[in-house]
Length: 216
Ligand code: GS8
Image (cartoon, rainbow, N blue to C red; front, side, top):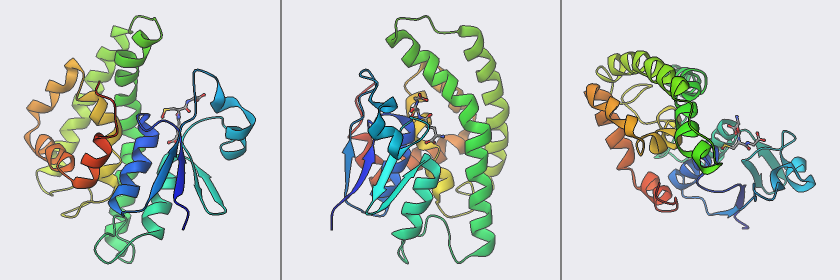
């Protein structure tokens, strides 16, 4: 069977999210680069896959998808096994809690962490100066968020309960980059969050993706 295709560079966080899911369910995949510098993401081929001209896009046979969290859910639903059920499908309460914490990641965590990563790494790469005021504001919001995460993770091993799920894994891409910034030490004040992060990083699927990423 032809491997599924993921369009976009592996190091781009929303692409990384999809790769972690594919690794978790052991599905063979091909990463097809989309050259941002050449504007390929806004070209007709990528627009046909993702009408917003963004990455990632994804192809599984006839099915073409975009939006990394939707792609991730598709992958985990289609390729789930009895051992690897990272959406907790078939368990009404557990899957509802996975949805809750997946939404927390998308709507609370991502908007706070992504500007820090963007300002710290991408802005200088593009010749600009990081907006320190924005970083500082996001760091203040980050601490408030981590208070909530610490309370949750001091009661449960993972965000949705005592089982790992997409809700946890979805935090990996931006946190991985964040951990290479000088701001990473904020995690030291949150022992349960730190233990959770170390546990996620020790997962073989996560490590296989890490090995594909350039070192920051
Ligand atoms: C966000 C995709 C996105 O912002 C998702 O897939 O989760 N909600 C979407 N992609 C960025 C690259 S960062 O990984 C992108 O393609 N930016 C170019 C643009 O917006 O023009």
